[in-house]
Each structure stands twice: as structure tokens, then as C-alpha cells.
Image (tube, rainbow, N blue to C red; front, top):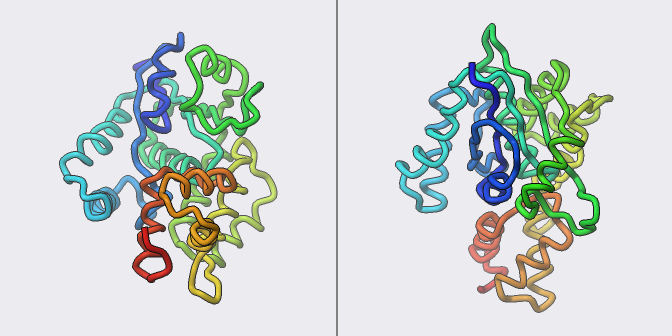
Length: 263
């Protein structure tokens, strides 16, 4: 049995991780499960076919590239590791990906179940504007591994399964019910604020705009009509979402289609 695999939350932290003194294989998680359609069974062919089509259609990416960059990379989990360490962040983008990973691992479990650990910082000493693992160097990542890595329990995995099931419904009532009925978040305390932020995306105002769209419209109406300026202003107040510029572009495209902005 292989010793350990580290599942990184994206390519942004790969350079820093390669500077660490940590042993084990590396798997880079390149999906963005907080966007686009989902079905609950993440281990099914239907799930990955759905994601392949959405990614290909939305970002004009060849399906073969998705297979290579995402599906084949995730295939590394078929190896029988003793330990799996997950490196994810506090924002909605990362927390939903984390739920996906945990449910994939749960569905793949067998008699030789690995120990699953999580490194999930909401802050970093001496970095008041900490934005994520991608900005850390090798020694800083080593520090997180030694100081905040926690082993996930059966309760954590059950909680992740329930959260994933609720999230996949895209139903405000069901997600609210899950949040309100969960008294203890164990080793996943950052999940609650992320899901609460997600609820704001599901609700629309009198103009039929959700929270993200309204925030971007406000920024545009304040005089910031260049995409780079819009990104910066959005990130300053909405780090909880963890959106990159390509995701923000999808919301900006919606506003343009509605005739509310012109970029």
C-alpha cells in the first residue's frame, strides 16, 4: 500500500508545495464544483459526463482536455493509500470541492480505508490579508501541516455527505434546514459560513438578481467599468466565495445579457 497522497486545491499551490519537505504523491484537484450542474453520486459516470459537457460548453474547452486535466488526475485515487491529506481553503469554491472529494472517497471506501487528514486554514500568522494556500511557500506549508492538520472522523465524513446531498439539491429550504439542524461542525467549521454565502446566491431580489450579480452591478455603477478593477473590488469584500476571474466573468456575462452593463 502506498504511504500518502496530498490532494491540492489547485495548480496555484503546486509550486509552493514542491518546496516542502513532505513525502507522498500529489493530486491536483482542478474541478470547480461550486459552479454548474451536479448530481449527488459523484462516483457515477453520469456525474462526470455532466461536468465534462458543462465545462466544455461554458469555457469552450475540449472534452479531451477535461479528461486529461481532471478525470485522469482524480484517477490517482484508485491507488491504495494509507493516508490522504486534503489541502483546501475556507471559501465556498474550496469548501464545495472539499465536499466533493470527501464524498468521492467515501463512495470508493473498502476494507483498507485510508486515514483522511485535512489542512484548511482560514488565516495565517503574520498575513492579515491571507487569501489562500497559493500564496504560501514551502516552509509556510510545512508549518500548516505540522500545526493545523487534523484527522477527519466518521462524524466529519457523515456531515460532509449530508452537506453534499443538501448542496446538490440547490434548494434554499433544504440547505437552510441542513445548516439549522447541524449543532456541531466538528473539523469542518468553515463549511457553515460557506454554505450561508451560497444561500445568498440562490436568493434573488426585485430585479431578479442574486447577491453576486447585484454586487457586481453595484461595482460597475460605482464607475469601475474595467474588468480588472471589477475583479479587485469584488474580491476585496467577497473573499468568502473564492471566485477566480473566469467565474466572475460568467456573472458579468449574465449582466450583459440582461442589458445592465456594457464591457
